[in-house]
Length: 386
Image 1: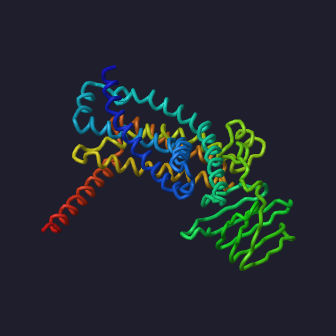
Image 2: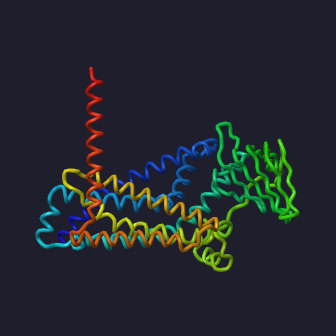
Image 3: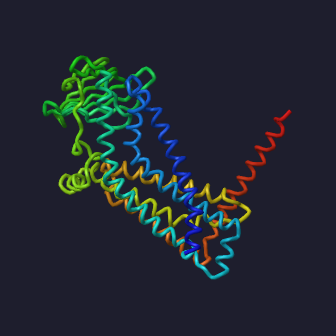
């Protein structure tokens, strides 16, 4: 128990510090982005604080696994650099016994993050949208999130690729199903202007497509205006069933079973999958942290950051492919299970003192590159000094 308390205390400080640091950076970036949207409001800082709280669940899903993994790496590297690991191993204590305190910790984090992803995150999505809708209604203007489909009106879906400094949107796609016939507009640029109880979409250089298959008609235009009535000049208040990212667990499960739409399947798997990232990182922490003493913590930390980038990019890529119907939903789990199996394999090899030599070589290369860069910078600094 004394060893468990010592390991836990060594890990807890860096975990809380790293979590606070990364969360602060993410929240500051989001606050600066929101400031331009709500700056006209009389209670700008109250609104920003409320919106940041609503985005917290999603940020926690990203930052908690990272903070857990990097602080565990720091703990293992510190024990090794101080020769405490050598003393424990010489006493016949296995790695699993040394770090057994992390088993209940990782289970607790997994269950907590599952609750966050299935309950708190969709609730935050709904409330965030409704707060922003009220802000835009008070300003008399409506904004659209880049690279996301916005379904703020009955029968109308809007997608924008980005926004320039003058407030014009680029790469606009609008689908209008209000009359029961699909009409799609694409435009190089557009402005969205509130005019009384109507929202005018003033599009430039685009194409209008109406109908389907052989009955489809196409019209190219230089300028085109589409007017959409908005009830009382306001957006409709969102409810959980409006979009897959806002659905409750029950609604999302019914959508995957009854409708089997790719986006609902992708969202269901994403919510279940994200919390398991902490399990993947747990099994990789020990193999990636046992480096040669002379390399210090730099080699293990660089390898850990590279693993984080790989895991999150693979998850993002598979989520997009599944949401587009290109891949089946189980492909998201297949990659995660492969990573977990590989992590367990490496942990067992470490227990047997049979770690693959390639990891030692990688650590040594990282150490040499690190030393080269330090000496290079020191040389330039000495030459720059008068």
